[in-house]
Length: 277
Image 1: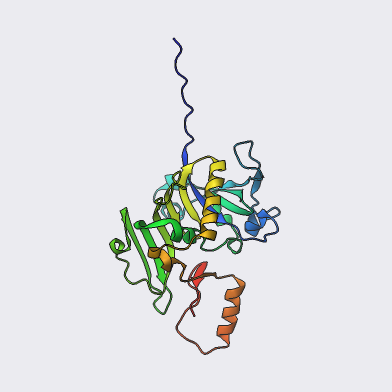
Image 2 (image 1 turned 90 degrees about the vertical axis):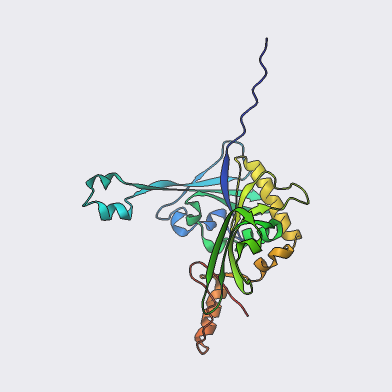
């Protein structure tokens, strides 16, 4: 008696962290910071896929670096065996063509190799404002732009709406991260992804099928171009982030130098900030 054919095992799920590149870059390698480009101090090596990836896809991988963690150095005189402690950092970035754009899909410490001026700010949050369900949010992080520069972060393991998150008034809030469930009430366009989180990037868990990932990101692009923010999440689009090293930020800084001092800070700490009129 012949046995029934065993179905092929489904590919495992991974977390995909996807950054949309700005238009007009001379090459995709320009999206990497200078040390990681060809000729840099620690260049990442291009890797061509052998199959199972859309045409044009290319990966960049950096040789793992070994470091002794700071806590091991400090405790080494007391515990000599800690001389064996090592931290390994791996960076891998897949440049994936989607429509007429490019995404940088990062694994490990891959996002730290990206040139932030080459990344389209707020892409993930813009998508989340259009398709994330405001009634099933699991995480909310924001910063209020002003004299206090107040930050707030709330998590709900089982999810809930903004009232359950108890985040208070959202006037003037610059949203930094949202996590939750996508709203599929108008059709299961994104049923193949879960555990969605949004910042500049869109992050989700999905099967390791790059052709399907390409299709998912294509639908996300379409959603941003055609859709508007849902009623409960319109505040996400209320402030436009500025990058510390952007030309617009430099112009604002030069303008501030010529003006009397005031309390409002136009650019927040780190690589992201916001300007208000």
